[in-house]
Amino acid sequence: MKVYNKLVRDRIPEIIERNNEVCHTRVLTEEEYLIELNKKLQEEMIEYLQSGEVEELADLEEVLRAILDVKKVLYSDFEKIRNEKVEKRGAFKKKIFLENVDEKGFK
Image (tube, rainbow, N blue to C red; front, side, top):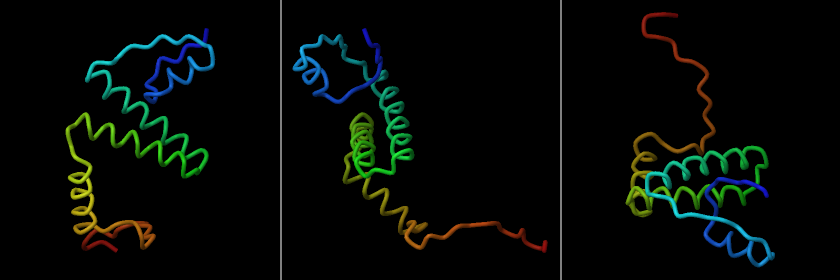
């Protein structure tokens, strides 16, 4: 028996059963769900950083959308927040790398 103890996509149990295997699942509470989504976000980020594959970014996006659902934030509202930050602080398109800042009066 292989133990996973992790959040999986909705169709994974169906896929496992199609392979003539038996899986045991349970439905998480809202509190458990958010904890597991945060773990999944980290897991998917690590997978992206290791592989650099765009497919892993799609997984990150799916987890992000699930977190927004739990927090009852519409994706359109999230986009508005993102756009406000871009307007106020910019994006990352100019590839600016901040090396240091001299304190006022010191050189």
